[in-house]
Length: 181
Image (cartoon, rainbow, N blue to C red; front, side, top):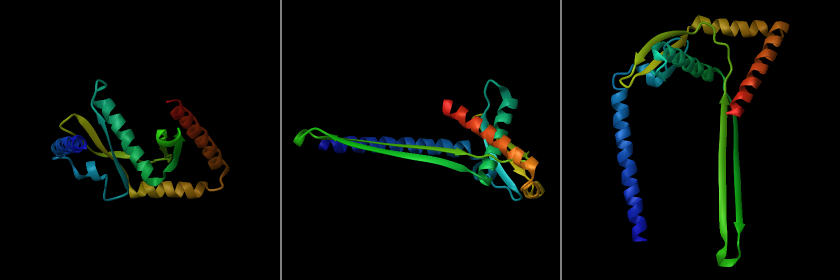
């Protein structure tokens, strides 16, 4: 029992010490970061930040990936479909004092978002001390209104219904690709 308490104490001290180091590194990494890197807020319209580590593909590749991540953040602000599943399994085996109980719990969650983003643009960019590119992607209030008007005008429109079917096919294809991973 005494050994168990000592093990828990040492484990707790290591976890606290490690967490303290991570927090200090995090504070140093983002000490001079613009506010939007952590909050993703922009005064007007819809915005989202995205990041990518600068690798062998170079700065241009990192910017493209960061912009895609920023648009993904914006899309998830507009609409997110969440599929979630939790499985519980418990079994008891043996007889008398030799009984054992096994319990397994698994949780799987997938989030998908699909939305047309018209008029997105990079408003700002910052490179962290560790070489990670951060971008702020934004849509102006006018672009948001344009999207809303396009949705209203396409309601019960045959061309719009065809586009919705095509979008559904594209989403299904993406789902199949994700399932293969």
